[in-house]
Length: 79
Image 1: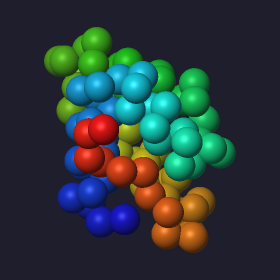
Image 2: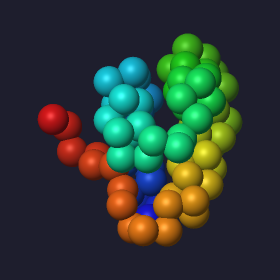
Image 3: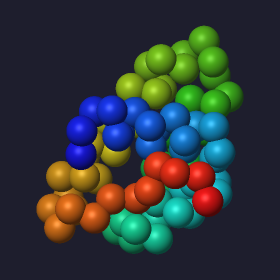
Image 4: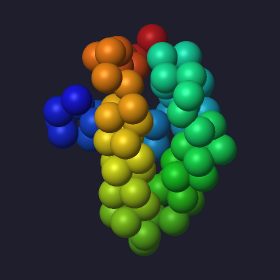
């Protein structure tokens, strides 16, 4: 996945929270639900640390993408 896509996905997760997490988990079922929720919650609840938290979420999405070499990717479009 390109960086632009991962940023869009990260931003959608932060903006929408649990509904976006559930969509991501449908596409990438091996993702760690609790880790995702923790990272998203940190980015949403602590705006002062938002940049750091958002970077952590971005890195986790990068790791997930590496684990899913079949090129499937969750949609960043709102449903």
